Length: 351
Image (cartoon, rainbow, N blue to C red; front, top):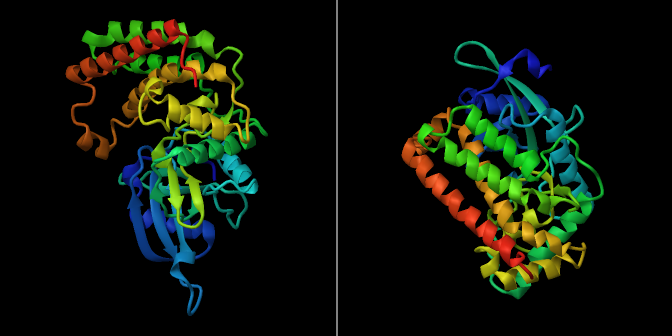
């Protein structure tokens, strides 16, 4: 199917029936009508169950997860690079939820859904085994070492292959285009526009030299504690590689910390210690932590802006984009920029 022949889909067109029919079409098998919608910030994620394979069949063996990707966010080659990273990790026996192979070959399905106006909307989706678990909160030294070693294993695999279609996590490649998008789209309130532009550009240009010479590789990109599950008798599981980036290793490490790195030196040191059981860590990257936090704040502004037409978003954030919103957001950016400058003046974080 040529997705370019149809307009990019709106999630409002993605009914439960459309989800079930799309999954059944690529699998050549029926579902039993069970469908559960799971919370997802950017994509749409559903739990389904295939028809019974026979008497005594364990229902849990028939459960799967269908992830429908936000149209227009990633190209097909970029989505396949996410899948390739997951499959590489799975081949190295790293606990991840890897995409299932489809009968027609590959891991990425395509579907056309009829929208309310009669047009066809195009979606890409993938199927995953259902892997439940509880959120993992590190409580002691061993827990932080476990997290570090898990990421060391992931990054060792990440460096084994390149990704050429994913975003590169540097100020110039990732963050400044987001700033331009917000400004060019007229999304920043006029009263805050000048300060937003000056603050973001000056901070990002100031920290850009810190990224020079730092080795970049395939990383998770959004490795906060909510994306680490603890499965009884199986250990830790890393989920949701949708934000996979080409970036510095420390991007995945700092997101696990419970506070700013300067207040979590012990935890950070243990993560690095566990990491280096499998992968060398460049201590220069510690100076990137506060700049990366600033970059993440810009990222969230841009991505929420891209979702502003979604019905759920308008209902959840009715004041997004008004003057008070931007006053608060720029205040937070200003505070973080001050932390960035203080970190630069002090020589950064040491583990």
